[in-house]
Length: 328
Image (cartoon, one colour):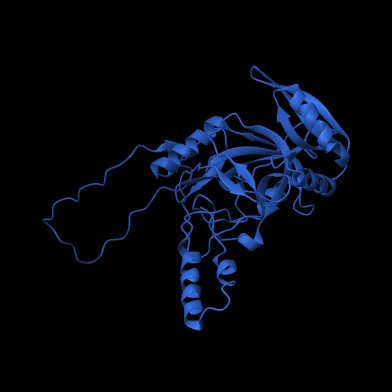
């Protein structure tokens, strides 16, 4: 659920008595504090305020609409996409993420529009080959043609915190994501190998009471194994990936495009190509997914992210709300 700007609605109640306006304003303030159980807190979305829990919950969520565009969250453990990454940080530090965790701009986390929360994804900067594993715990980004919104620290590790955006590949880690999902569902800490000092018993007080029956041990649930292939630690039962950068071999010459649409019927693709040809060089490329052949209408290549954003705005304004920026 997303917060609603009640103030913009009550502000138009012209001509009502002062007492009615005051009552509506008090109600609006109350609703703004309590309306959301977990909304997007990154750029382009609406976040929650106040005292926040940090452990969060497992969440996929229902389809939702932002700025006229529908998004369909799903457990997609085959997810592998390229696009433009952005980052968010100071303005949202310590606010609630979409699954109820507390956002920490220095943790290795990210926001994604549709992937399960939490899940683990590997993000690779296609310009320099730097790659990190991040925990998805928020929804977004909803600004321009962005594929993922990284925490400030994650963007630093990938080397684009100063530039603001980067061409990236985002790949879900299927087995590892299932493990963190199971831990979040169970509400139990993920156990890692014991590398720290042995725990010490608390000191006893000077007075002891004998003859009491032993306390009944609480019901225990089996711990969920930590992802063995990802370095990290736990905090409040959450598996947090380590700030570990891996250098990946990447091909040079990745180009930016605006994909206006994708169709299984070639005629539909040609109609859309003709409609958007006035916005830039338009072409049709083919891709096979499973047994289905798709025809993708693309504009480009486009030389910069800023220009791609401008082209995307024109394509969306022409009625193609599902258009997006891609990297190929």
